[in-house]
Image (cartoon, rainbow, N blue to C red):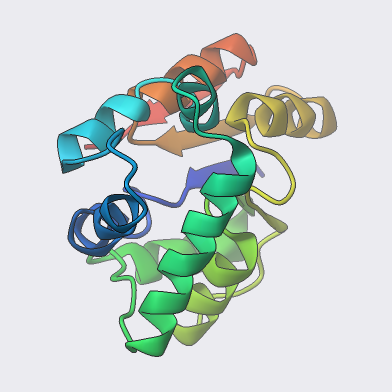
Length: 175
């Protein structure tokens, strides 16, 4: 039985569409010009998002406040993060046969709630920014727990780099 680790943003859920529509507005309202387009956000994800923000003078407290404002906005306006077509069925099948994790820099509680709304539960753990601001850190720990029969599925170049740095044995990319 393999251990499967899914990234959330861009693999399970189509968060990019919402981020381009609503998340960028929060930066604009706060006078932060670092992210003005969706491409700016994607560029930040070509490495570790938190490290990118650190390098450009945006501290973690400010990021946390922005994430909270964004998630509050979505909740208050009843905007659901859409899951990609076929993902609920895939996750149900994986959860029935494998140990499954979600590894994200998103809020673990929000991810868990959204998946439960779709009737998806039974993950070994949902790891979010509260546990680690680096996927490398999470992946190193998971590899230490489970050995080499472990797979990481992600969509971003930054995640792939962090998985390589973590010496993760099996890295799969989706577009």
